[in-house]
Every structure is written in C-alpha cells, then in structure tokens.
Length: 287
Ligand code: PDD
Image (cartoon, rainbow, N blue to C red; front, side, top):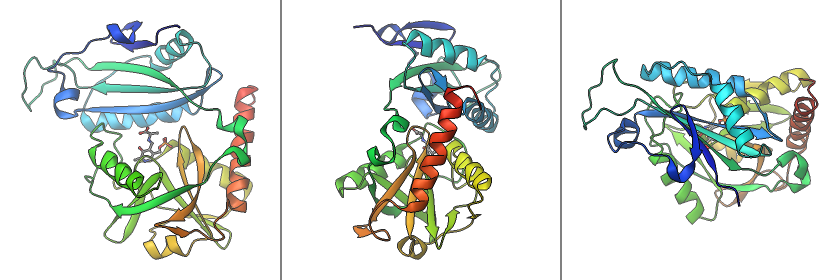
C-alpha cells in the first residue's frame, strides 16, 4: 500500500515524517486558516475561488504569503495518485519559538497540505445522494465567520450535538436569524424561489454557495440573499445545504419534522443536474 504524501513547507514527504514545532501558533492559538478543495479525477473544482477566499482569510490575519498554491496542490494530488480527493491546506502564522500572543513580521508561515479520498457524487447521481436530517441550534461562534479559521470548536460541538440527536448536520441560529451549517451553507426553497442567508461576517462565503447562485442565475431560477428565520425554515418546500465535497444535499428533516413532502424536492434535482453538467464540462475541458 502506498503511503500518503503530504506537503509541508516546501517539501513533499510521507505523512508520518512530517513534523511541526510545538510552538507553532496554529497549534497553540489556532492562529491559522485553511481550505478544503475537491479534485475529481485529478482535476480541481473551483480552485481559483478557494484561493481567492484563502487570500481573504490570510489578509484578515495579516499573514503574508506568496506561494504557488496551484503548483503545490496539483503536484500533491498527482503524488497521491490523482483520482477523487479532497485537498486540505492550512497556513499558520508559524513557529514563534515560545508561547506568546504577540507576533511580528519576522515570522515564517507554516504551510501544510494533505489529501483525503472522496466519493464521486456526480457518478452517484441524484438517486445516489441521501437526504439528511438537521438539528437547529444556537450559533456560539465569533463575529468573523467570513474568515475560514481553524478555531472550529463551536462547529465541532454543534456537529456532535446533531449526531447525538440522530441528525447529520447542525444549522445555527443567532438572534433569530439562521446563519449556516456547521460545515455548510444553507438554502431553502419557497414557491419556486431559492433563498439563502446574505453574505456577512456571520457566515462563510462558501464557494459552493457562490456556484449555486451562479448556476441559478444562468438557468433563470429566481433567488434572494436575505435574512431567514426558523419559521421560514419550517415553512420551506425544500431545504438544502452546500459544501465543496458534498455539492448540494437535500435536507429532509428539521428538528424531527419533515421538510415539505419529506422527499428530495424538484428544485434540488434541477440544481444537482446543473452541478452535474458543470462538472461534466470541467472534466471534458469545456469550462
Ligand atoms: N467547510 N460554512 C462553513 C462553516 C464551512 O465550514 C463550509 C465548508 C462552508 C461551505 O464552503 P464551501 O462551499 O466553500 O466548501 C460553509 C469545509 C468543507 C470543511 O470545513 O471541511
């Protein structure tokens, strides 16, 4: 069996040989940001959009970084056999040599990337995608959720809470307004119109969210980016979540109650079809 190859600070090496300092600020303070990018048959999906968001996160943390990420990631994917992979990349502020909250410009960022096999959801087709149940719970995160930061403890806790309640994702709500899932964005459908929370520092600007809206625009599906309440969610005809490795997933149950008819909805099927066509164009080099 071949060993997984990871990237760390300029080197490609087996995962069990990669080492970082115990004084790395990513480890000590969560002073770091990350991205998760799907690759299908070795081809990246929305790499440019992910790297743009990485740039936004790094700028927010004032971490300077000039790295040829496309070159690094494409080589990493090739070294791990191509195929269907999600690539994880993380940039921390680096090793401060001791534990101190202050930092200065002399620090060298730690750059890490690794791969994980993923299922080809497009090969599975709409009937191969399982609908999920969600739990709605309080959003306990900070107010810079637009930064894809590694401090994911609230996300981990709400996901665990959801799992213990028999659900697969948690949707978070703050001051009566739904924000997003623990690791996904939220969409709902009412009377043929698609709704999603508007971009703000309370949510992550999902690359998949952006693609859903792009495809909806092209296909003439009406949509609105707006505040959504718990009542809107319970009253929805369809609810979806979106994320890079899952594309769009139908939510069939909210807090134990069926969404609409309790089955995958027609607009979700249409959107999944639009994603499949987009994916096909990417695979055949038409995009
Ligand atoms: N998470 N919101 C949150 C809080 C997320 O963690 C994610 C993705 C998204 C969707 O973003 P995108 O469509 O760009 O994947 C929204 C990744 C997949 C993760 O943490 O594993």
